Image 1 (tube, one colour):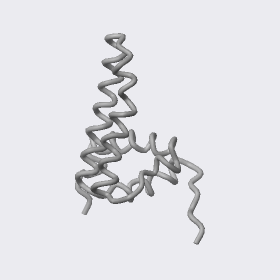
Image 2 (tube, rainbow, N blue to C red):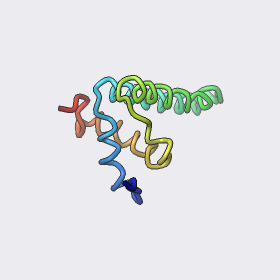
Image 3 (cartoon, rainbow, N blue to C red):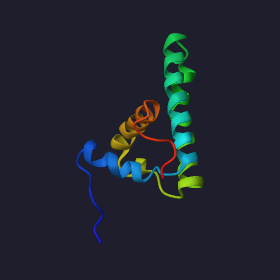
Length: 105
């Protein structure tokens, strides 16, 4: 069977949510994105490039632990890097404002 190809973020995000059902995985994604944002702000404020360099390790580190050990699936980053990155921030915001629950029923 041919795999569906996503052509927009609006179309991709519901799929992204199905790949992020596990409570621990969602918490890890949330923490990783929060630390990524904090690292970016810190790097800019203190003119310290090490915080900027750490961003992909922080973001992907937390997310990939969530996928490989808790979701037991392959991160969408490998096939849809831009949509996946945007969706990480969308999920972070949706979790922060309560639009998405941490625990999916």
